[in-house]
Length: 396
Image 1: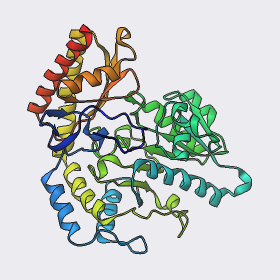
Image 2 (image 1 turned 30 degrees about the horizontal axis):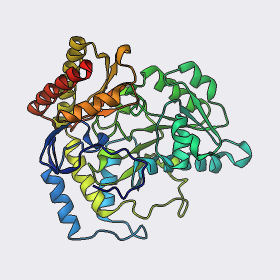
Image 3 (image 1 turned 120 degrees about the horizontal axis):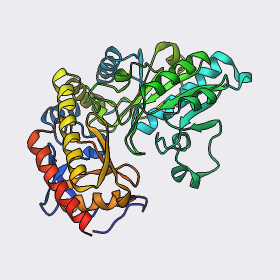
């Protein structure tokens, strides 16, 4: 098939055609078990009947009306997010990058509103190897030069510190800091969970210097770690939180959550989004939220996450390919042994050849983000296919 798209993607050598639950079929009819979840997006699997019903119902009523107006689906989804989190207000957009863009802009405007321009309180502190999106601002805040260096000159006023380094964050935050942004789990950089000590130190130092604490929960939010949002498992409340991916379970939507004290700086006209709060996306988001935010689903995530981690540890011990399995809930990463260092992409390719969709997180970690509803049969068959792929891997 001829590719008419720009060459910034390396497409896999298969073309998906249709899917259901945790199974995907390509145009040739080959079946795959999906443990990638559209990069933690398809949290209720593929083509969930209740999501199809919600989308179909809304599609027959209203697709788009612009943000000159609000709509019932947008208010309903925002109400769900507010009533179940620390937040008082929600800004809707279309992606995680846009949610983070909004968060960073809000942090700077809040500082300007409350401390004035002469204070120069505009610095953002982020973590090395963080990932917050692909806009020029968010890729600059993300601490990975490989994603930003080709687009210089970059926005200024951004400093990066080592992840999970309490001394570093305490030294970096000053009265010039407007915000600190942290992923509770660094997903793209190796599935690295933050320590409670690090997040607690961040909250304390932000309070001392009157800076805002932003949690990027684009990948960890909406049940992925076994709670609605990961911050609740740490007992640390942010001032702003970004969410996307699983919020729409495949329909593009992002959200920035904040309290009314901070959100009041987004005065009329200060920020916007043509498609943000789209009725179709919000209607699906409401149904997805109602399925995910239940004890049954969240307990299932914890249970299946423990099963998956146990199996991955067993395979690692048996084959010597993995040295560590880390993460929370159904966001797990397997660190390759030194002998196989840098070959995660190759193992992902071999898994695909054996009917299994997985992810990488950097060059040395195999990443798993399956449906939150994955059952034992799919999980067991997936592990069998992974084991066969690993045998091929170590035999090369």
